[in-house]
Image (cartoon, helix red, strand yellow):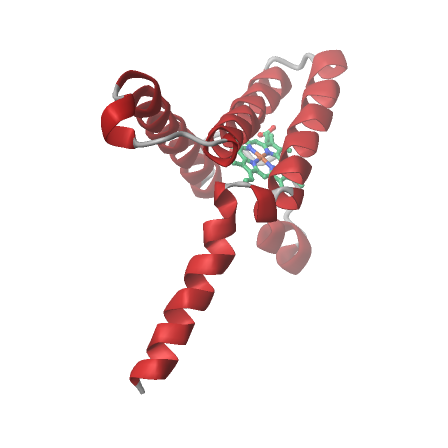
Length: 126
Ligand code: HEM
């Protein structure tokens, strides 16, 4: 969306059937499905999933809340309920902020640690 807005001046909101919107919605559904499986395994199959720590729950919960509020923003906009859509967007942005700021203290840290570890082992191999 950022590329469309800033590189091509194609301002939002984009129509529901725009390929980028379809990708956003499909990705959102896939994220919710994946999170449901991960949460379910941690709750029901505790022995197999191993010990669940604060950082495991934090990451799953915040990513779920971010995705759900994202969908809420879109539905409220499509329903033209502005008084609710703007606050929902505010909440969506707070969760995104939380997700990014808490990268070092949540499972999201793998994003950085794993990349560095792969680079390190690749460098050693060479
Ligand atoms: C990890 C980050 C994010 C996740 C998981 C996420 C998730 C979602 C999802 C699933 C939707 C509904 C599907 C769609 O409209 O395409 C959505 C909508 C939306 N998101 Fe996010 N989002 C994220 C980051 C952002 C960021 C960084 C912004 C803006 C700065 C943003 C602004 C919006 C807006 C404005 C909508 C409503 C779009 C509409 O009304 O059609 N999101 N988000």
